[in-house]
Length: 406
Image 1 (cartoon, rainbow, N blue to C red):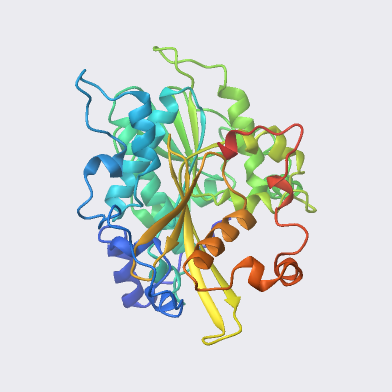
Image 2 (tube, rainbow, N blue to C red; image 1 turned 180 degrees about the horizontal axis):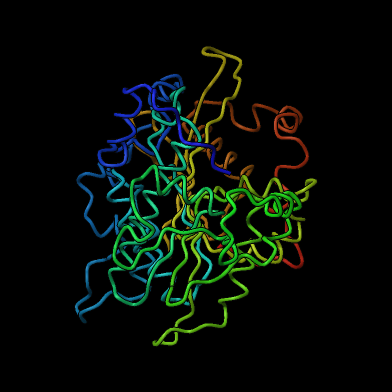
């Protein structure tokens, strides 16, 4: 749930940084801060010549638009190959274009449940002490509105950016100083809506139903003429509302015969999946029944790790990111400590968190930063990783779809 807006006395420095972060993020905006990378101790790892600076990379690699063939158009194989080698974005502007293009391709292939995931603010801003959860939520809403504009401008239908409930939506509308239709064809609204004529500011029944993690009690209603719903700032307890919306709209078609699309926008579904099955949260079957059907079309998640070594510097800090731009595969990228990433491996099946970490570790072994497995010993390696390296939702589950991993 989104908390109340920050107090009027918020320090001006943080406000100024947040105001420009989305507009002028540097190349390493989506990587952990360079200060932590300085302790990696992998100066020998250099960016390969093929992976030149993103500023010099052709736009086709950023936006998944390969050079047309002699016949006048790119083949599916060429599009897939270009997406496989797509670079992480150099700015939020490039990120928006790339995420919109990836979503368009997924929609054209018939996918209707999409995930877009990336850090909404540069890493150094996210680590500031006075950046609150509300600041992050506000950044996500602004990014979602820009994402929605790209689809609304096509004239194929309206787009609704949806917060969990009316109170959160009203707070955001007041803080952003916009109306419920901030742009042509774009509506900023809520998943849960009160009954017509119900003017109560506080609705205790919604709180009770939300605590049970069992949906909204019939207050989720689709919006007529809307072809895309972009869901932001929802918690695990509010995800059943999204499923309820999907059940109501899945059989609808627009004039061209296309069904509505739901976009899970920066919801950190990996984190929310970890809450499933806990008291007052949806059960684990929710992953099998619904969340496993959500296709990640644009995915950029950074991870940081530490590892002890028997010689100086004794602790090796390393980091990387898992990146995917549909229809490309999942790229395991190692941060070189220079604000750039080096591709380690491409995976058609999304690697689990333990597997992703091991792929980064193997890359460090190849560079001689840490000892090889045979030098380390099987027992010591087992003690580091344990007998299980996957979470319950990453295991093969009989009733789950593979959409969320492909």
